[in-house]
Image 1 (cartoon, rainbow, N blue to C red):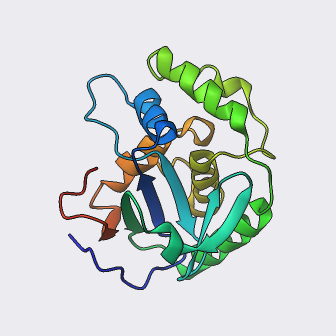
Image 2 (tube, rainbow, N blue to C red):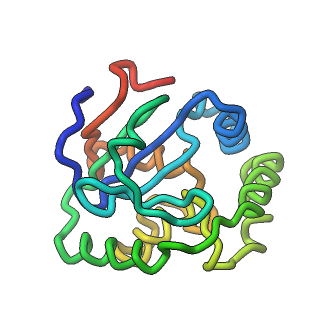
Length: 184
């Protein structure tokens, strides 16, 4: 597996995981049934080769070098992403930039996790102005690359759903990982 960071591209998916209490909580609540342990608690999308768009306290576009340190990290490249789609991804990231984080969506996501991951509580929160990380990535791709890009309804997407979709080697290529084992 690649552990030297290559030249990243607009549209690459950045998956994050660490051992903080928040990260562990997100991984626990988003794990589905008998699924292997969830590694991913946060996701972002590359804005350009040096910056990642992600939902933190607000949607921000930050230097990716800083974000690729500490904890488990993997970067996946969608195979065959056209230039026009990459330009649309950047424009969609610009649209979301500065929007406040939707903390209550995480509570709804946790509540859905307690009822087996069903899309129930998240369905009630359709406010586009308050994104969370997985919602941001799923909607950017839904609007730019096509319906159902990650195999889930964008409002229902979790970081683990995004990571699971990226494991499809016919659709995505792993271009960076922080460790050979790929886990944390």
